[in-house]
Length: 197
Image 1 (cartoon, one colour):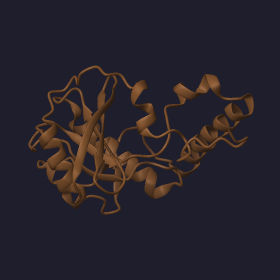
Image 2 (cartoon, helix red, strand yellow; image 1 turned 180 degrees about the vertical axis):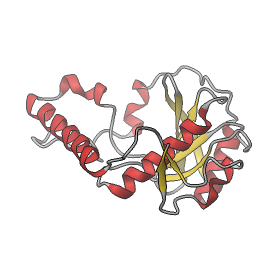
Image 3 (cartoon, one colour; image 1 turned 60 degrees about the horizontal axis):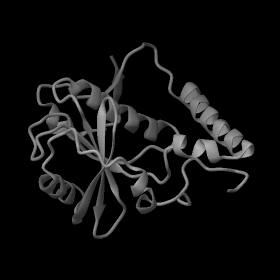
């Protein structure tokens, strides 16, 4: 590896080489993958040819969506479909805010729906897949210099958040109009105004 190790690098192993590291456990969610492919194809205006569950954590399940052309996409689904409306709306707003107000790499948000009133019957976020791997999979094999480089990059990200994202109150970010009665409409999102609650 280079002495300057990049935490977001397209030179890291591809998804195909990571398949063996991914758990083959069945999806916790009862997703209709055909409807998921149809949704992704419609939202991204290209044909989704494959879906594969990448991982599941305490709060979310993550799927990789592959297309006949163009980059892969990540689909994130909350495991608790009852409570995620405000959490998911805040997550989308926060990622959009960071993308707009910093130089930190965050995935482009293609589409989201905080409700279950959609063809997959689950709240979701569709976002661009960023290159790279989980750091925990690489950490033990990194040289001391590469570990220092990674920690320096993380410190720079935290410093940028600290200096460029200041608020007068503690709370969550939401886009204007998102918490209205018809949250799934997304109220022509990102009118440039964010507020903290």
